[in-house]
Image (cartoon, rainbow, N blue to C red; front, side, top):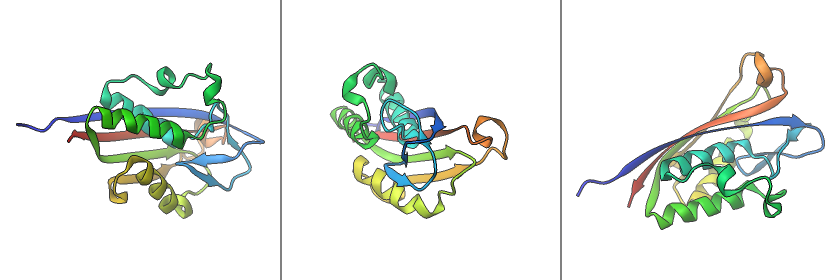
Length: 161
């Protein structure tokens, strides 16, 4: 019997604002601004969840965690990711790999990569070597280059186990 594989792609973007912590991949990153949103606005995890939900054929995070629902106000995106992982397990899928790219002019994420990978791997119940995190600037072009916001894209491969 052939194994079933599924690919998912995710995207998310949030504005940068003063007065909020910057949370990326479940890790607080030192930066003078944070991301605006109903939850903790963790753009990396939001893109990852959108990719996972896409691979599962389950829509997007707005369908499952609407910003009109007070239960999700200020919630840690790691908690939302745990719910998505339960959906994944219920459908008997496991992560083959995830590749996530932050789109931002600042800050430098290199010092945070290990902690982000560890956090994501723990929530996904997957080995760290199946998670890849990277960042790209827009060479000072557009909203990301002007430090008005951050975006993220993610691609995942799932296997029914």
